[in-house]
Image (cartoon, rainbow, N blue to C red; front, side):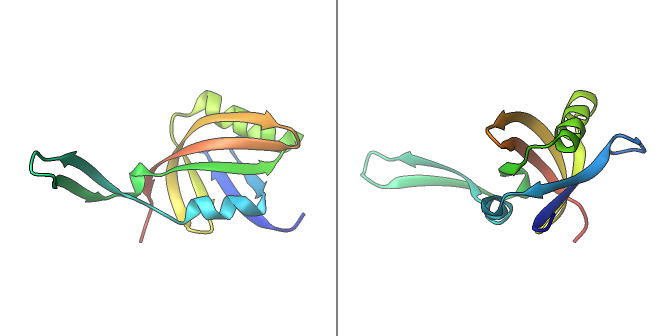
Length: 121
């Protein structure tokens, strides 16, 4: 099977804790983006007070669509049941993530991944 691939792996050796997911093409967009941590408060004079604490990759949450198949569901189920934090190799780099949720939607397996940090440069 060709296409965009994301690798998931456990934080320590686990024979069932590593594998590949073949992503739907629309999932690539979730890897590239970001936002700043900001709070905007209207002021009495009609302006705004802006509190900005900057940008961090840990504010990202990705929703990924992958092909639903027995090996994908086995990997995702195992990682989500056993580990709080796992690692993902994506087109945007290598990240520590938390697998927040997963569910089947038709022919897809939809994952919600909370980014904890980017590993390396």
